[in-house]
Image (cartoon, rainbow, N blue to C red; front, top):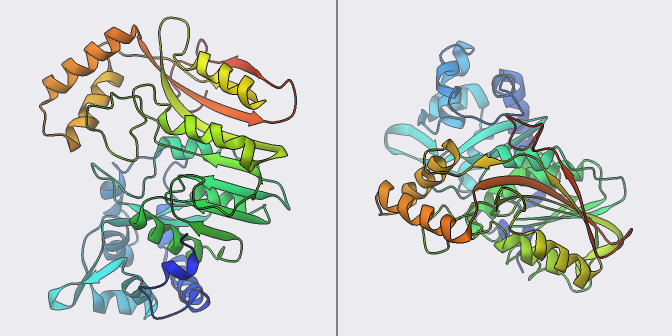
Length: 378
């Protein structure tokens, strides 16, 4: 088990003092205009492409702060002290930032992002992130409806943005993250947003480290979901196996034990399909029957996967970032695997799962015929 106490071993201060100091840092960021700058970008379309361009149009006095907090560039400590006082040094103590020669400092591969009222550290966009934030993060966030008094579970928590959102309403949230680097950032984000009294952080894989017999009113998950052959390299945070269902399958199998009788689960995913059916439809039906679940499946869109299509090229390019193989070799092996599976499309979907209602059934709503553009939204 790993909880908040374990996550403060690298800092001399305890959780309450760290929370106070991070709150002071947050206050400085609100006062100086940094939060105003990062809140300018479209919250429903995560893209870092415009950060650098907009940096040169920002308030002059915070451009160096944008370099330091958003663009993962160095800043001189005297500049940071002048703008933020001593508050930023808590990031050194939590080992999220490091001191460099000549009085400079830099974050350790992180960016401080604002999303709908929350400030969260995420990985500066790179080829193989640990603390992921992307369009699917936003797609799940928009589907979460925690209610007052509920107990929630956020699996594959990453930056913790889903846990933070749930904690705005729920009585308690357990956030599970297997990656120790991401877990340290997750804990910082919880403190930074003042939710350490409602959110408990756990390590381990999915349900493994959770207290025995604990059940939840809401289980949320943005698991690794990209459908990609197991034998080919792909960024860890995205690789969901050939059908995109490798982790989601385990999450659903654990719901009977961890979901309350009146509870619900919300999961986002991406899978493969031929001209008609999704490759996971039969397994979803079997999971519903075996575990007496009601699975509501929302199909959002369908993207062609022929080798010339943008989606196919994007999958290969993502693999190439972490693979020693050449683009053409990856593309050939992926195309052959898709051909053997007789699939032609990638399909984004959302699952809403309960234990009450017409148990043992999968119910569909399909927006793919009317959704020509959106990935996670119509």
